[in-house]
Image (cartoon, rainbow, N blue to C red; front, side, top):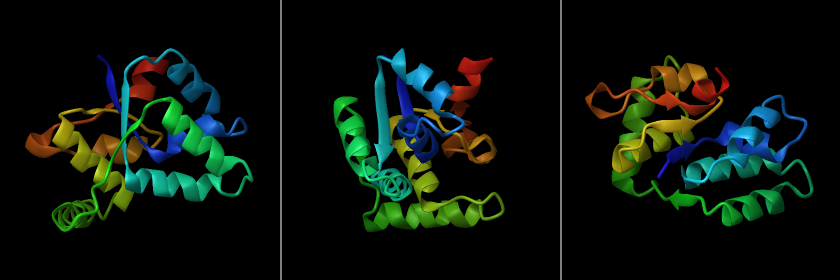
Length: 142
């Protein structure tokens, strides 16, 4: 089964037809029949961005539910400390908390394919053993 990590940017773009990345993300998700994974931090960030639209929060919750997105909570103290260390390591990129939780989730699930618009960040970030991420949007658009 195909497994992808799901970052904030594509989630927001999918829900907003005016977003420049909407068409590319929608096309990918239309044909996707695998499992999407994300974190509570990503959903919090996405909810903030979609809340400017009156229907945004409802559309986000309905999409996450209907797509069967698996959501992981990485806010307990050990994960919080690990995320903080990652953010310090990549402070020059920079890495935000949601990105750090996705890196931690990648390590936990051994899943390094990520649907993200953050090419700079996820081209730079490394998981354990110097493992790189595969940027799904880039590999499907070429």
